[in-house]
Image (cartoon, rainbow, N blue to C red):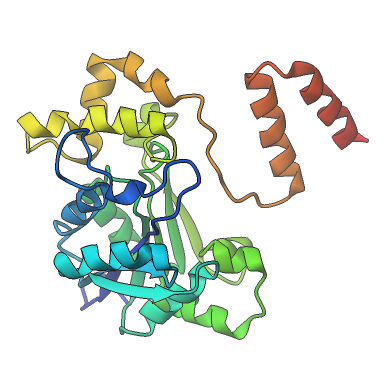
Length: 281
């Protein structure tokens, strides 16, 4: 459906209270000492997105998420609870609540959201008739994924792996029958190497510092928050630069390349060399 026609768009925030490295992080106050939870930063930014019809929290039925559900009730946010490991099933259930033309997949631990860029990628997705659109060249934690509802619902006819069920867009990304586009945001490629997701305490410390800028300047939004800090205090981004970012690998070769790079960057050069030799064998 063309962008000029009536479109229905759902913003779905994948969220849960369980976290191995930083338990309960999505409801931690940020900046440190403020009364605003991390998740509220995500929701408040998304409320400014004029193209969206609905915002959902997609969480699981695990008991620890009862606190998250209470937050949603108190803040009048739609919440869907489903299976813990089959995250895809939560998105499919929400897609069936529509009708929606597309769903934007977000996560609750990425509080710096640029609404102007989100609008650009959603419009591009709709205008090009894509099944899947993803941005690149933004900092880790700021890229967007947009999925056509028809593509999500199409997944119900396949026997999916556990990885496909856990990682919502993996099957679509790995199969050629879907129309996909990687949309580079070249204006901010110089910020691509920065890490702006919250998994570790050091991630929280960095983003707490970045968001503290907004207390004195409420007009500062999205990528501007990052750019201002990067221009004035580039050293601050070294605080979480060594943190490992989990990702889904397309194949064993890609995973081995990433493992070797990680080992080399942490001075395990002999182990990295052995791994390289074994892979070449």
